[in-house]
Image 1 (tube, rainbow, N blue to C red):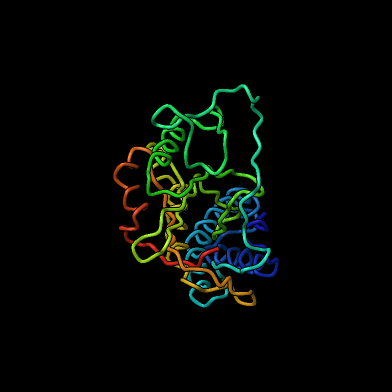
Image 2: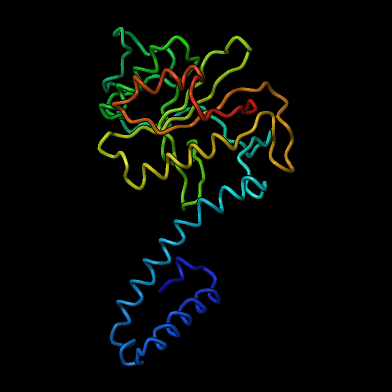
Length: 256
């Protein structure tokens, strides 16, 4: 009953045995335990899940600090590579997205982009990126195998909504940014706060010019890297700093 939370059967047995021992110390009989077994299991699962949620980010960050977990370029075929094409189920005659001036998009890596493939807020965000002259390119990321995904301390990947590269600054350094967008109604919920914590952690963990252990150093220029959760209604306040790099928490990363 707790095997999905505590994969090691011996550890799981010890936890259950400890619970039963403490209940018997408090004068619970076997009949009491049997009668309330479903309740006890449910409460045990709640406690274990809460403890896992507390420990996981601490262990993840400790693993990064000790290099047991790495967020770095490898310089080989295991690095993520931008696909040659993206797929859509929409017909070629479907309405395409336009730029802020009413013409074709100028900086998207893939064209065309159909309106129905994005919701209203995402289209507004995409047009916002497309009109910024500081951007070299932007990409609306997918949420399936082959898309750019980040692994954290929870099961499954996080697929940021947008990736973009800003023009080089005066020091000759580019800026790569990944953005997870959220509606303001999702501010503070568990998914939003997990992604915010993860993107901030990985932004700080990626060090300039550092390849993963056992991998070939890419030998490319250094660029700045940032990852953030941005609410749609705060893009005007947050995005200029993320694009320019004048925002706390940026980490310098090695070019891919």
